[in-house]
Length: 415
Image (cartoon, rainbow, N blue to C red):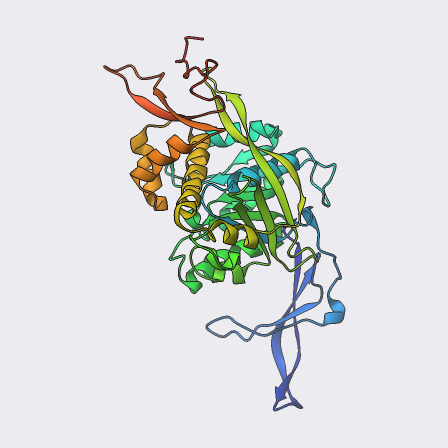
């Protein structure tokens, strides 16, 4: 909740500091004392009535309350802090975020709210609410505690804009007791150029302040650039993304065994910096309101590991020749499976357009479909196509399409 502030204006004397000496008392200056119920107390702000309305603010260290950091998800998600989670496309950043959110709705995270279910807001800029709902259902989330947040302008969905919408969103979060906000991806919600430091700080600094004021956790999802090197240097856009936050998580998928790794790359509030966890992905069947059944990704086997994201991404790109081509192909498969898991059966033209934005070519998509295995990417007739001829869509299948058990999706109303 936003701390309450009691503002008292009074007349007093101010001592002017000159060249290290104390003297020259000036009187009749207006001061404001802001008594903050949480955090700082006895904060004195000098109002000099300048055009910029800026003034020094001195706080005695002895007057600051001592409060240990708190965690919604210890040690990954501190409260009152903006956390960023970054990784290549298709390595399960979104799935991991929704998995932790699902646990939060049931009070099952190791943190200060353990045993106490909390409310979560999700702004999926690139994914529709239907797919987000089914992915949360796969993780057994309490769906009554999850709210999808966007913004409306004259009845049109315009998405969240940072930092423009922050003040409006604050009140909604207080009313609905939101404890965690996931923004996926955060760059799609930001105004300005994400390659420019000042534009990045202009969006992230107010967001971090919001987290502190409302005493909530905010999780923003980012992408990596291609190649090896130090993992956090691969974050797309300005280095200000890493510099502006106090909590940073990195995610990578190990091409050798398919496991995913998340590493706490930066943590200013815990000794856990460098700690890593591994987990696997399985497909979970979800039935939509029309009776279609298809698989969505689900986290399994989340546990501590000695491996870290730096090791994994450099191992993935350390191969040469044919192996390097295979590693690159695995990356496209990962992206393709995650895209189809999020969006369901999709026409190739739409897949190709989304892939082009990620830097993948048509030939890479075809090779990825042919090489995919457990789960398989299959091309099947569109069960809902009512026009002439046959229209095909790509879909994810947990069953080998060459086996007798495989069957293509069934059209609505035919079950």
